[in-house]
Image 1 (cartoon, rainbow, N blue to C red):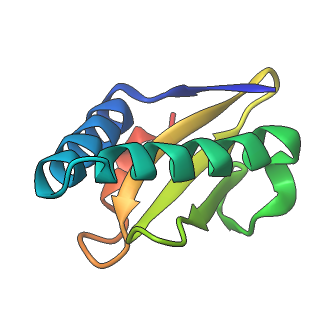
Image 2: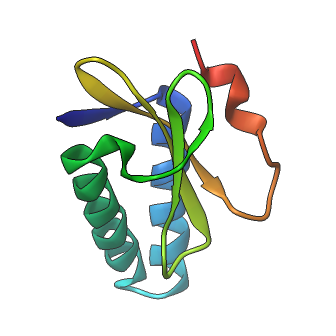
Length: 98
């Protein structure tokens, strides 16, 4: 299975990469590597992580960075709804569920 970003999640993801890269060269690449590893696990087994809402919305946290990937399992792909900071604005992404 593959994945795609909701447009706002894409912007969040890239803002996080830029933030970490500006803080310390190479840290943005570390963030991308961890994100890619999480997405590979999700694509292999989409229901591996807890369901937090219907329809089929799941969350998994990154280990090194304070972000969670919020995603929806759809018939043909995974839709990344948010790359959400774990301590800011809980539930802000709920309007992205269609």
